[in-house]
Image 1 (cartoon, rainbow, N blue to C red):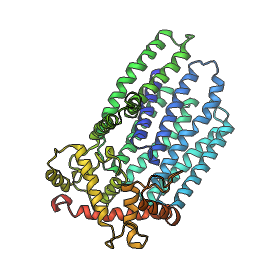
Image 2 (image 1 turned 180 degrees about the vertical axis):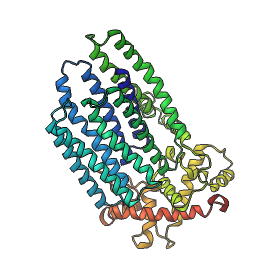
Image 3 (image 1 turned 60 degrees about the vertical axis):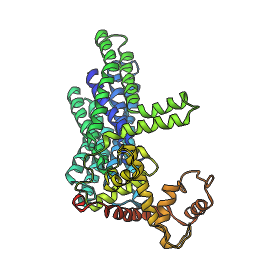
Image 4 (image 1 turned 90 degrees about the vertical axis):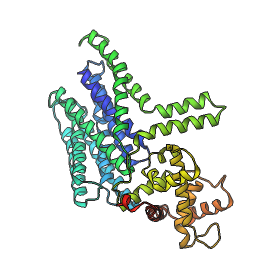
Length: 457
């Protein structure tokens, strides 16, 4: 059973970290990652508990509270995906709904006391608190039909949330054979992680298969090398050995560390570069650019603008504007395939390389933003005709972060200081977001007009 638990743990832990590494700033990815990694932790804790740990009763009482974490996180993901619009009211209502479900699950955990059987009233409360809101969110999303892509795909994801949210209780309670529960759960975890990653890749306009297969293959290798040694030790010790608990803990900690180092290899390399090359900022920057380009290449699609409609093109443009200052993300943008970029590369006489395309896309976006500037000759204005230009130029090109925590106007030029003050005192963040979306549609229309008709259709 330790081997099967290790497989489920590795799959869930890797998928959670993989989603987090894609973009920790996206609520859906961050919440799904919390659900998957906390689920992996519960699987590991349960394996340690049942192997004959000295404090099994204490672990059982701790586990009943930990099983609530992935269930609530996955429900939050489902609510996030089902949200009909992006407004502060919907966000507040979403947070309140998730909080209510979390309190209900916690109340059930307090009533249950532990994950040990038999079934008690607290366990039934937890089942209901997990199942009923999840089914309600699925039904609401299907009725609203607010999701991109087929509704059936969303129902599948919701069903996985429902099944996994209950499986974390079923496994320790022993309502079904442990091997069957773990095997089916491992399959559900794999499909769930793939579904969320596919949703994000669709949202970003990126390819996924090559990047995910490479990460999975590397995970299998490191898990086999590090976890295999502990499994051999468990087989030698036997089911009643005195060191079995320590080896079980070593198994899961080794897997967790090995997979984390693999998934976050690039950020760790950046930290090591800062330590080793602290006197060479140019070298660090060059190495970071090469790493980011290497990571982005598997996410590039072949013919990324084929069969892209106007709405999808506008969404891709909004994403590219949001990544204006991040070449590693612009490298993977489908907009690097714009014919206008081919022309600009030819005019400059530079090789057709991913980083060059990303730089040209950045310059192209800057030119399109400049077209929004009113022709009155000033550098800054607050009238309605200035709002779209201000909403894109100062936050993205200049780097004005008016709403960031502890943000100040320090280091900004006089014009940017004026813009910063205007944003802070007169422009609600919600209004800026709406202006940016509207301006992105104008930029998309400008870029779309440069795509040949045969490619745009």
